[in-house]
Length: 220
Ligand SMILES: Nc1ncnc2c1ncn2[C@@H]1O[C@H](COP(=O)(O)OP(=O)(O)O)[C@@H](O)[C@H]1O
Ligand SMILES: [Mg+2]
Image 1 (cartoon, rainbow, N blue to C red):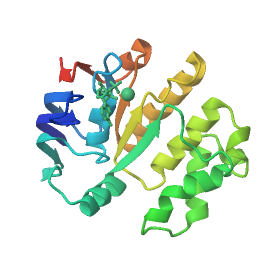
Image 2: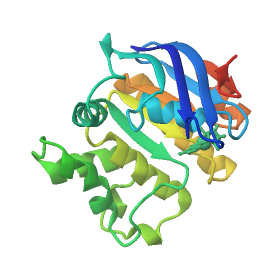
Image 3: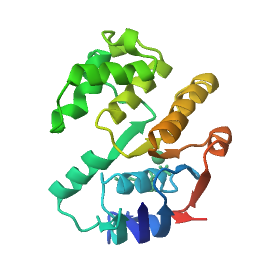
């Protein structure tokens, strides 16, 4: 379970360009839930996701993951928590274009201790995402929907328990977006993973179990 108490994030603190990106966020997210995070551009959605995923640390407040306080961990320990618990999916897929599908999905395993049966694990995962036949294809030859499937496979290869997706359907047409959402729903239901999706799309948000609304760095 995730628990945020009084979480704030200030960029450029005490400078003329100071930004209060998050202000006193209190939030509980049950394990195995699937939530949408919505709000206008600049409201703090990505900042929240980055803090949840241990890519960034809050300026103030307490962040507990499974009852362990995270906010005061060292860089190294924070990275270990990130690698163990979180998988990330972003809007523009962030694939390495001149790598094959296989090689893209393999990237997180370079930082993982568990490299056993690497090839089989990747192929099994690609199979569940309907991408096994494309394993040797170069990323630059894929459609947007296929790219996002590869990015999802890359997010899942270390078997994280929480998937953080920042506008994962933002660059896809409606049909592709629906397909990608159905993959997230399946991951949530069948593999019991927590899924948090930042989205602007009401149709996608409605298919989640709940919606977290952020405006000006505050939750409503
Ligand atoms: N690294 C950064 N340095 C300074 N300001 C930032 C940084 N990242 C985000 N911001 C600012 O923080 C606010 C929240 O940004 P963000 O979390 O990206 O919002 P959203 O994802 O909802 O569009 C915005 O005003 C943005 O300009
Ligand atoms: Mg954002």
